[in-house]
Image 1 (tube, helix red, strand yellow):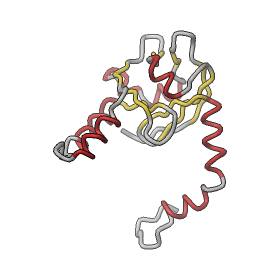
Image 2 (cartoon, rainbow, N blue to C red):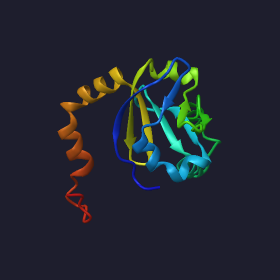
Image 3 (spheres, helix red, strand yellow):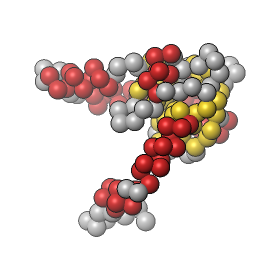
Image 4 (cartoon, rainbow, N blue to C red):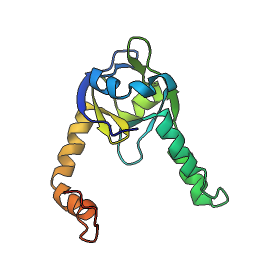
Length: 156
């Protein structure tokens, strides 16, 4: 799958249905018929939407973990806690299960944001807070993650 692009503000209805933004839906078009996996994020109080092909690639990597090591079993259990298979209906809506709504604190106003090969779904206030909290550290983080001098590929 190619990299997804865009951040969009949306609303969730009282039943937990999210109308996918047209631009994201268009980018996900090839994956729409295969469905998605929706899960809790590891580091933030948001949800991650994986196209099925991306999920299967990730599960192939995780399947290589030695299940006879307790930390691997603990990781797998925590990583897959609350995982749900979801589909986009004919109207372009995605149903967010109640337990995942509670985990992410999603109420009505949300942000749907691309994260390379997956989509993050945030409560709008939590998203803005996470962006604000990271603003001061972002220059240092960018230098640490992307600024290695020994990388011959160089991003910029």
